[in-house]
Amino acid sequence: MEKKIYVGNISFKASEEDLKELFSQSGEVESVKIITDRHTGNPKGFAFVEMATEDDARKAIEALNGSVFMERTLSVAEAKPQQPRERRGFGGGGGGGRGGFGRGRR
Image (cartoon, rainbow, N blue to C red; front, side, top):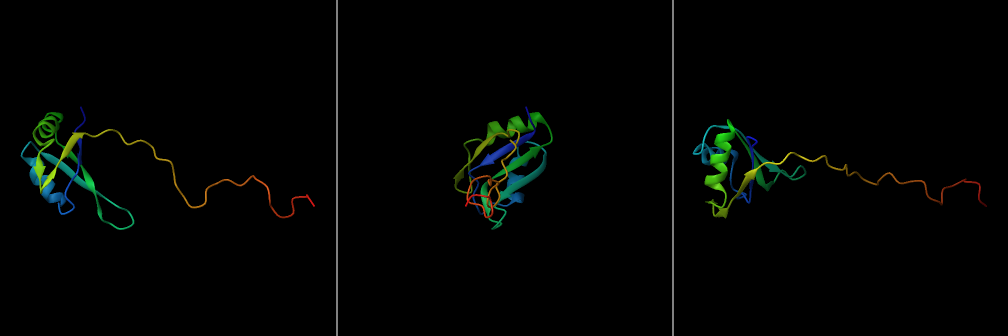
């Protein structure tokens, strides 16, 4: 089991300190990171908490999954490794096709 925990359905009012305090009841918290939108800076409603030991992580999952925190029912589970994401840019490669200028067809 990983020491990193996914926490979903977090209140948008919750701070990283609030989550650290909550998870500290189950063991030693190494870090808390609330995920925010990169453009607006607003929280996305989920976070990752890293516990000091796997045992602490297991205790936190068992104690907090389905519990109510700041009027929201939390979803707490072992974090899964991040999958590589496809880069999304503007435009998008392409090219190739027809219709270019000066291509020899007249």
